[in-house]
Length: 431
Ligand code: ADP
Ligand code: ASP
Ligand code: MG
Image 1 (cartoon, rainbow, N blue to C red):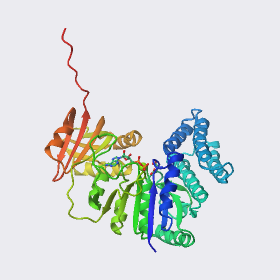
Image 2 (cartoon, helix red, strand yellow; image 1 turned 90 degrees about the vertical axis):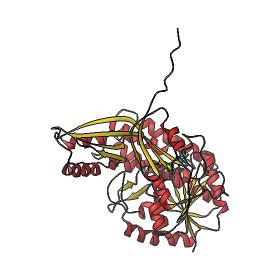
Image 3 (cartoon, rainbow, N blue to C red; image 1 turned 120 degrees about the vertical axis):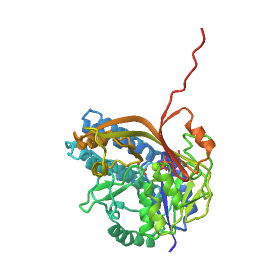
Image 4 (spheres, rainbow, N blue to C red; image 1 turned 180 degrees about the horizontal axis):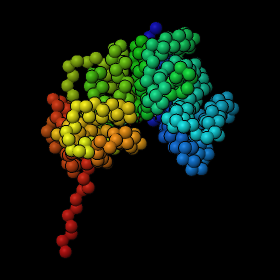
């Protein structure tokens, strides 16, 4: 059986027009066996995050925040369906789950509660999509992916228990695909062995699609996007970007590891292990192949720029100005791992050790606290990490304009810099 896995992100289902377009795409593939993984609509995950924060802050806004999320979904349903459709009951039942949580006082573990509430976004969108496909006579089965994807209990960043997930996927998804051609399910979420919902980290729906592709030995995976494919830079930042028609798994892993927002970094490896090609395709042009990521070997690439904003440098030194020695470093790394602070760049000098991490203030605060009095830590905020793959001198010069370079490292085909953007200096008018 040929099997495809499709993933539609929040941008593809941000409004009724988006759902209509998904229906249009799936009509073209009605003969194919497809597992469809869908994210929460548009900015729903951000809105649910705000709701969790408001619940914990007890700022009196939780009811109105929830109401707005409800209204958005109701309006979507009203635009997609004729007057009576049982989708509304299904959606109302899903909201009741959040209402129950919000009635109680907050659980001591913020991340646990976050996952129970934020995961609702994907349940809502997948239910709406499944009902909508039925309405279009595209037969499908809705699947609760929490019955398939088993994780540990690292809430907000759960790790997959691969063996059980694989068994579940085969036992629960393949029989559905014997009945109908399309299975609709959620990205981003999973479940612990005690049946608590977990999430896989922001933007994790791509990863879900890769997990399912791996476990089901899919023939190909397709991510439908609001861009023509993988581009040489983020089109929101750069004007002159071009599409990369083909990429190797290795190149895609490098790009996403350094922060290219187009695919979640954990997505590629499971696909590479089983040699499953990944197509990053434009949802507005379903005929186009977009970018094909596969086991290509000898491709040459133009310069590719990846910008990771909101970086912080942590300068760590010993309080008695002794050297930062190996035993200090091993302790520092253990703490970085404990607080899940990913090291984007680092440098060790005689009396200080500097790391560049994503600015996640509460984790950095806890990390600093646990470093203790033996160390002194100074932070530098509002920085960017610029990575240029396959650089040339012109691109490098251009990228350094109006920037203060705090760190720079050149490898064979990659330059990385931690930079501060300088305000453009304006010449004073002469009197
Ligand atoms: P989705 O909701 O489908 O997951 P996202 O908004 O998360 O979509 O990701 C798509 C966006 O990624 C694009 O709109 C684009 O602005 C951005 N992006 C960043 N880097 C790249 C790149 N190298 N190539 C293509 N798109 C990129
Ligand atoms: N809805 C989740 C998020 O916005 C997961 C995803 O879209 O991939 O992060
Ligand atoms: Mg996304």
